[in-house]
Structure formats: structure tokens, C-alpha cells
Amino acid sequence: MDSGNLSGRNTLGLKAQADRVVLITDGVQLEPALTEARPFGPITVLGGGSNVVMHPVQPGTVLLMNILGRELRADDGHRVILRVGAGENWHELVLWCHHHGLHGLANLALIPGSVGAAPIQNIGAYGVEVSQFIRAVHVMDRETLATQVLAPESCQFRYRDSCFKHEEGAQWIITAVDFQLDRNAPVCLEYPALKERLSAADPTHDAVLAGVMSLRQEKLPDPVVTPNVGSFFKNPVLSQEEGDALRNNASGVPLFAGPEGGVKVPAAWLIDQLGWRGVEKQGVKVSDAHALVLVGCGAQTAEPWLTLAADIVASVESAFGLTLELEPRVLGHPQQIAS
Ligand code: EPU
Image 1 (cartoon, rainbow, N blue to C red):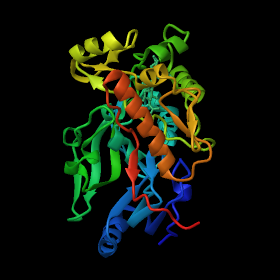
Image 2: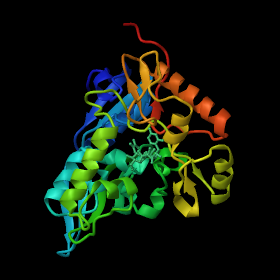
Image 3: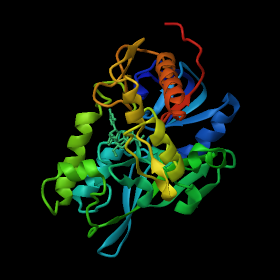
């Protein structure tokens, strides 16, 4: 069992202490770890800690998911099925696939976090969502300890959402993910900002990877250097009619195609209109480079992050009648720890 200090295990660098922390490096360790953890209260699974806001007190047991491994399960010379351990680093996987000529994931380069966290959020960027490549998610039920292989339909993937974020999937702990990749896949240039970045008419996968990485590095701070979780809010998804109504009191709002014929409203635009960019309160700041990103400049606990986020949500609600949802998960209890 590890020390309960989680301060180095979340990209906001927040002070947090768990009763128990257990490192899981192999799938076979999970069943005994869950059985042992039962008397100690709730069980929280942590991957890279790059999309969580941790309160100081994490009751019960935190399982640090560090199961590694990449295994080619099928290969028809064109398409492959790759099984990847939940603890693998996401960006390293993207680079490894690219260098082995297995295409599909380049638009998702530089997203912080682990492979096991990717399906939970259905991570997405530059016109691609990870669910497009997932063929199976391997899970263990934290109550019954039964293992299961979930088909993509069972995961209920949506924009930044899946069953794993809701009651119906909360019992599952992800141990590995199967991806289908393609040696002959075309590049994906649907996202206008990416297309503009690439000057060649027919860009290569190398050019797309480099383009995505340069775009991200310009707009999104590196969590190793600057505390952040990427986007702090989700982009609201509206029906076409709701989008038209929004245009009446948010003149010039850019709307993007959303799921099921709806529209996606860039929350960054709404926040920007209200003058939040660059605003700093209690050691947390709205990034100068991107209004959807909050960055840490001294805050050591979750509270100032959640307070600034709540102020932004209230201001957007009162100006535009839209309720922004937080993108990261909030974990634990807000009691202070003695320093
Ligand atoms: N915009 C502003 N002000 C800003 C930034 C953007 O007005 O400060 C407006 C512009 O109109 C721009 C539009 O917002 O055209 C969209 O901006 P951007 O292309 O940066 O994308 P986003 O919707 O803000 C989403 C994802 C990002 C992902 C990018 C690129 C969500 C919550 N965020 O951001 O994902 O990298 O698209 O695909 O969907 C993350 O989830 O942590 C994340 C960084």
C-alpha cells in the first residue's frame, strides 16, 4: 500500500489525502485489492489525475491504475485490433501507433491522461472522438468482481460522456481497451482550425500529427508546467431551434455541428464575451490563451477552482440562459487537511 498523499497525482497539484492508496500494476491484483478495500469505505479509481478536481479528503481507498501492455490481437494486413492496458499513457500510445503506421488517433495527440480514462470521458479533439476506434472495453465489476468485455454499444458513448460517468456504469472498473486502427486510414481534416493549419492540399499523417500538436501547444497549457485540466466546461449541445433562439441574444455566436442534428455552442466564446479571459481569483485564473481553460497560479485546494467555475457558470446563465456543465470530475470531501 502506498502513502495516502495524492498531491503529486493530480494535474491541478491540489493537496489531497486518501485513507488508503493501492497501486495496481497487473489485472490479477484488482480482485484481491477490491476485496481488501471493502471494509474501508468507498473505492475511487485514479488514472493520470488529469481530469479531476480533488477535494482535500479522499475517503476510503484510491486505486492507482497502472496496468501496462500493448498487444496486437488481430491483423488482416490492413486493420488491426490492439489491446492496451488501462494504465498506459494516452499520448505515448498515440505516438507509438503513429510510428507503427497504425492510424486513427493522431487528432487526439497530447491529450493528457491514461488509456483507461479515455472511454470514460470519450475524449475528443479536432473532429475525432476516441469512441470511433473503440471495439471493446474490458472491465471488472467492483461489487461482484465479475469480469466483462463491453461492446461499444453498451458503453453509451456521447459527447464527453459514457455510461461510466453514470449510475448504470459506475460499478465497472476499466482494465484494458481494444482499439481498431487502420494502416490505410485517411487523415481527418474536418475541424476547420486544423485544416487551416495544414498548408498542403493532401497532408500526410505526419503533417496532421504535427499540426494537432502545434495547435494544442499554442492554446492549451502543459499540465506538467501549469496546473490545468484542459477544458473546465463542456460545450453545451442544443437543438437547431434552441441554437436559433440563442442567436437572438448572443449575436455572432459561432455554432458548430453537434450530435443528432443539434448544434454545439463554444462555451469559450460565451465566457470570452463576458470578459472572463485573464480574470484571476484566489490563485486560479481564466487562461489568457483560451477562455475555456482555468489555470492554477497558487491555489492549493479545490475550493478556489470550484468557486471561480461557479461564478463563470452563474454569469453565463444570467447573460445567455445556458447552464455550463463542468468537464472534470470532482472527487472527495471539502474538509481542510492540517498543513
Ligand atoms: N473561442 C473563443 N475564445 C477562446 C477560445 C475559443 O471565443 O478563448 C471560440 C472560437 O470561436 C473558436 C471556438 O471557441 O472557434 C472553438 O474553440 P476551440 O477550437 O479551441 O475548441 P473548444 O470547443 O473550445 C474543444 C474541446 C477541446 C479540444 C478542442 C479542439 C471541449 C469541452 N473541448 O474545445 O478539448 O482540444 O475542441 O478540438 O469539447 C478538453 O476536453 O480538455 C479539450 C481541451
